[in-house]
Length: 88
Image (cartoon, rainbow, N blue to C red; front, side, top):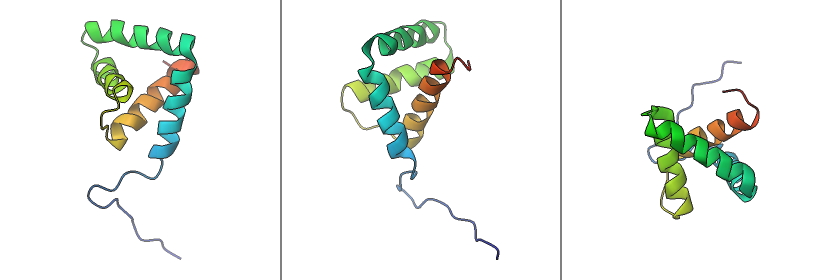
């Protein structure tokens, strides 16, 4: 049986974004680890690291309760995961 290719509809969030959002919320609640990660990201952003710049902006939007797209949330979750697992 061949499965047909599926794509997201316009403005449809990725189905895994809730997993990413929950992971980010959990990381933010682990206050010391979160502040250390945020400080490291900010230090890299100052040096024009594009990943850090985007993630720091995403962190700011999440902290302020502003809208954030699914791909930004998933990117931030992946960065937090990578830092946690020391894969960066």
